[in-house]
Length: 356
Ligand SMILES: *Cc1c(COP(=O)(O)O)cnc(C)c1O
Image 1: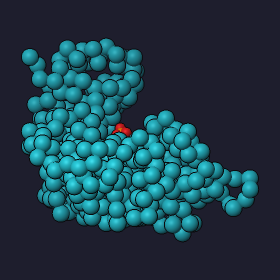
Image 2: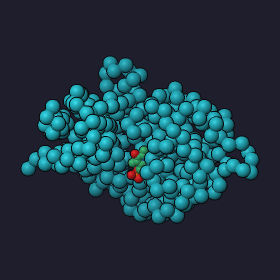
Image 3: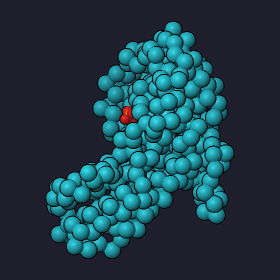
Image 4: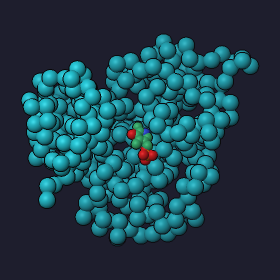
């Protein structure tokens, strides 16, 4: 049987044997009574690593962002966010549905940032006509792009100076940290755990709250964490309960996340290298524009005769054991369960399809 190379998302990873062993060995309690030792240990670990007072383990990144939005904002408040931010575009409008929190979406610059002048202009004066602008929410990485660190510092400083709270959707914060550490080291060697954690913490400390996903590149089966001050996390804890996210023997899941933090952080550099290998392999095919990846996501735009061929391409790829998603813009995501042979398998299947 052909080995399947699943490039649809970094969420598709299966827990490794060692991660499963850690899950089985985890001491358990009941987290609604706050006595699950594995959940408590994970919350302390992630808060400590990123430099926050407290953290909350939640089932999904969506619930984490929802808890953050509803903890920062009251009914009638608004948050400034990018048009393509997950928390705005891909989470069913939860902040508006559950919290009556209005989004103020802004267009992204080509590098994924929100222009500082656009942020400035979007902050409403204290006037009865307007919603109260309360929060700036950024995402890093955004569509696989690393936000420049200078920019993160400037945008969050601007928000703070104007009295806004700052939230980071860092579903892929550790991918950002690996890429940022590699830039800082000018590519001389692959950054190790210490350098990557230092960058993750530097990014996180620009914000009042940070959400990270364990179930993406870190390879855990389930779970995210929201980090912030003790008082903020106490509010988020109440919202998590309302959202149905109060779990019981969730230490089994927390143990997987904790294992991922110990073992799967600096290895993200391998996923980034595989994304570059894929992008390089697809260079020069007529009708395909390949965006050079900064982290683990490769976007390929189809144009000309190739434009309407994505469905046929996907069907062809599936006969070759390769899975991907996209319509006019294909997305390939590398992760723990993809190896160089799998990338080469994808490249040759795509080249075969386009007779390139
Ligand atoms: C996946 C993702 C989320 C949501 O995570 P789920 O666990 O799928 O709910 C939030 N933000 C970003 C940037 C993501 O990529």
